[in-house]
Image (cartoon, rainbow, N blue to C red; front, top):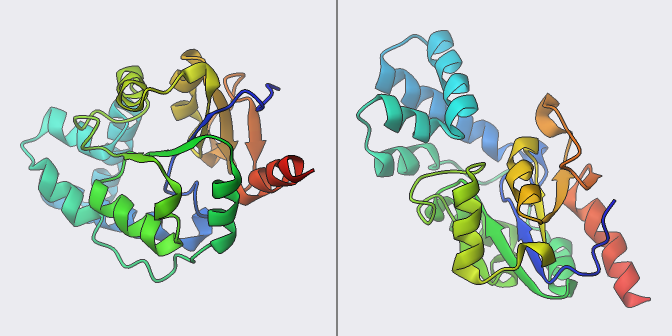
Length: 219
């Protein structure tokens, strides 16, 4: 396990990381993606879903796979699939407090669209906690886990990867972060995917990981 005392930049994935997966936002997004896929590729639901999973595996996001294989409007996709209600997403004053206590700068690094990030962060009540939000538009639509996307993020905000910690619910998205020198923290169960030695720390929920840090700093 690596120490966190050297960390001066705290980088967070957003969906299913800043809030618990069971709050269901990504389930709603997935339903929208399924519908978009069926319309875009002209396949029945089961076949469209299988193709979407293939795109995720090969390209990192459904959109990247669609753009590589079909003529789609990326902005139309992003607008459509992220147009979901956020009623189930619970505001978290505790998360805001814990983020504020972290020493150094805080960032969001998400494959989601900017309009989605703005809505989610505002709903949780943590918008003001972050020094920057890096979204799929900032990545030129090339999503995590592409190493070039991580380098683009680091350059954009002048972040030293050896003094940064990255929190993420998808194990493979932690691999390039670790390769660049970042401390990696897996939030959740990894969705059943392999978890290797590129993961430095693990926690079921983000709050579970941040609470002891706050207590340590207060001591």
